[in-house]
Image (cartoon, rainbow, N blue to C red; front, top):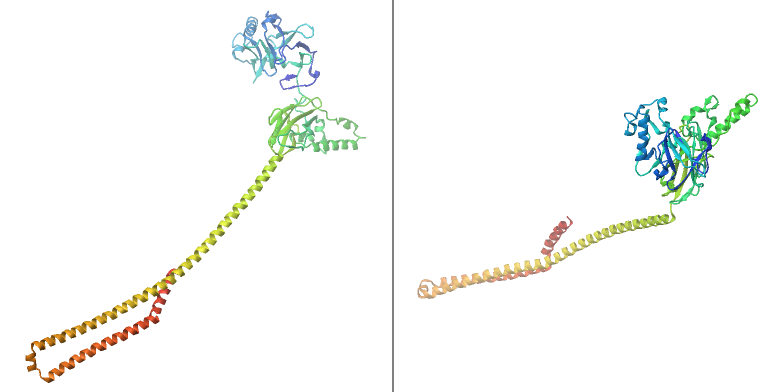
Length: 523
């Protein structure tokens, strides 16, 4: 593995010797968990700081650490040496680097600072060797400012981070329990110059699987150079198309075939041009980014929805995908840090689990039945309510008619009896009046007789026989009148009873009363 300022290369399963400018030197691994190694001593230029192996309790190589760390004793020993020998350099005599200060330094000024060496124990019986850390490595350039890339800590004697590893191709040889260091001139990736590259799908597109199960095949991409991207076709330069990140693979193949066809047709006249067409070569050590842009899934085993993988020596890169839920899944892939490369998309599909389908089907069926049942109950309730209202109206009408009939009968019975009683009462009153008249007449006659008796002698003397005849006639007339009144009362009473018995007058009365009641009920 080499780490460069513009990128890096991670090679798995072998050694990438293309970046090496010297033979690797190896030191044994003490602890595989931390990649611990033996540090024997430290030098500032050629001056030893006179440490012994016992002073280095733990020394670790860690590519995930940025700086170079020493424990306090070692760190301040290095600082003391710098202050004694290089106090005139910026950041050492004053405004010291290790106090958090940064300085503007030219390239020539950087070379004036000393190189620090770590003496490491050799592997396989070989002698120790010095791992050089020049100022170009231990100074970090941030916005044209140079900052000190060496710091201190208490827990670890030496922690070798990226400021050291950037100058070497570091070989983690676990099989032989050793770590190798080989100097490199530059750890440039094949894509660091932003040259046109071509991504194409090799395998894994349009797969189907049940949710929560890993897709059977990995998503595999091939990355190759696109050397013919600058060739002009029909007067149009394909370099104009390099700004489009979504070039279709088929279009590129058609373009290349068309280019070859053009040059083949002109082979006799342009043999040199045909030789200019180069076959695309696979590119290794390039970072390809994968992202799930649609659907619910993750990359295995990271469980993330966005990852970056590096192409191998054959230009291939692959990822594994696991869907969380059912549905369509779209995975986007593009070369990281290169805008002259096309973007490709994988389309995957995740099916719902069978038991979910059964449950959903049963739920839909149950809901449908429930809705139908509720609708039927509502309809039945409306029908029953309507029928009940109709029956209630009919019963009300019947009750009204019954009440009217009962009222008619009651009126007939009560009315007739009342009228008859009234008439009989009137007749009795008339009879009483007549009897009273008769009694009055009798009283008058008695009074007359008494008067006559009291005045008998006088009357006999005064009233002659003619007057006595007149009185007798008067009494006879009164008796006749009384008899006539009694006879008339009896006849009238008999006629009234007959009229009421026939109901002629009551019929007229009851008919008008019933019509009035019916009108009120209807209203």
